[in-house]
Structures are given as C-alpha cells and as structure tokens.
Image (cartoon, rainbow, N blue to C red; front, side, top):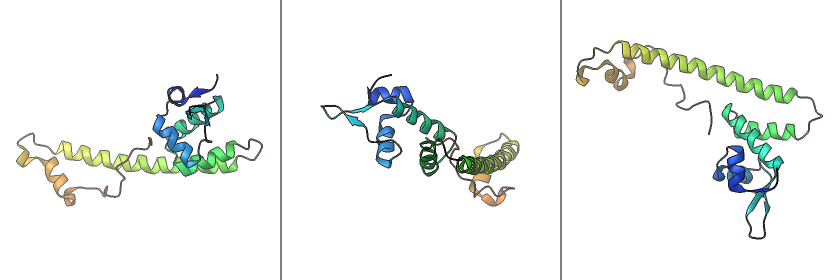
Length: 150
C-alpha cells in the first residue's frame, strides 16, 4: 500500500474522516504528513493503527485505554502484563454491563407480559414507565449506552 489521502484512509480503515482528525488531535495517531496543497496523507502504518483503534473501540475500550494499549504496542519487547490488565478490566466492565442488561431485559419482559392489550390509558407499560416504584428491580443505575463505543 502507498501513501493515501484522508478520504481513502477512512475507507480503508473503516474510520470516519472527522474521527481520524480527532484521533490525530488526541495523539492516538501521529500527525499526518502533508502534501504541497496541505492535504493530510497516511501510510500503511497509519491505516493499521486506525484499524487497531477502531477494533478496540468496537470492543468497548475507552480512549485512555486505547492510548495505553497503543503505547504498549509501540514497545513489542516488553512484558504484556499491562496489556492483560487493561483487557481484564475491560472484560469486567463488559460483564457488569451484561448483568445490567439482563436486569433491564427482565424488567421489560415483566412490563410487556403485564400488558392487557387494552387502551393506552390502562397500559401497564406506560404505568411502569411513569412510576419507577412499580418496577420490581433497581435498574435506574444501569447506563443507557452501548458497549460498542463509536
């Protein structure tokens, strides 16, 4: 692969152009080389790094963890204990989120099963949504975000 402009780097890596700029500003990606017309250009190592970041984000890693993982991957001869620790911490976060989602699902299933299929005025789902006290589980602390990231 050769040096490519930002649009092609986005297509090759699966990362949006605006996100590439953001990663560059945050230091996750080295500053791009520039053409005579001041356009950003990226090489194979940049594309591979963007793919690493995208995959890490898809697995739910935060930008701080990705920064640490990238720093560690830049020094391949060192012990990987720090990498393992970051991955285990992420796995624990995913496990907690799965538990939260299971609680949410159970509560939603209970609400739906209580529906009498009458009018909205008598709807058990609407009543539960309006009054958290009618719920059987404490799902209020469950974050309303996905594990996937971008």
